[in-house]
Image (cartoon, rainbow, N blue to C red; front, top):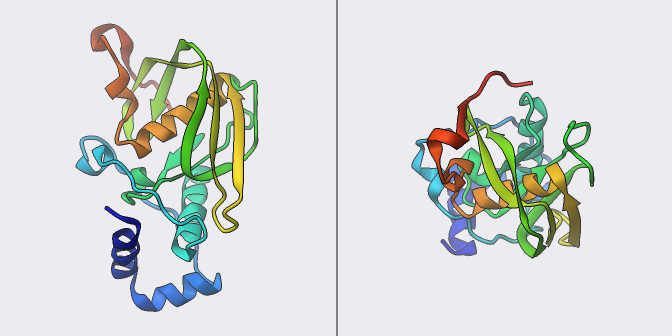
Length: 196
């Protein structure tokens, strides 16, 4: 889906009248419903978007609002709320496994510019609500993307939990959930005990 098709789809879904509200910055931020597997939309790769488009700014705000009200959530991608746009948010502030912490990060069109060797850690996901799994991901990573609203280039150097979160959210934008990275489900998937 091209950016112009995405924009047309978004304006069709949300009405041309709402476009003026988005453009003026006068819109209501709403918490969005998070999709869960086996919803096929989770497997659809997202398309690059214009970071300064008013709808993208509103979508980014909705992602942050949804993440903030969701127990134990440290990141959320647009594909998880049914929008095929390359934008996500994350914030590992206060997470017990975090070492680096850039605070709230919201990126459009993220790219991985460097990654280290893999380490295995446990992960969960709002889109796979009943499972956790041991997933191999890079221990350190550098990601670049664009800030919604300003279009400014942002570079995030992360390790530990923050690196894992960045890679997890980028996976969502590429049409993957963490269980797609599991090599041996019998040994690496576990029933989720609780959201904390």
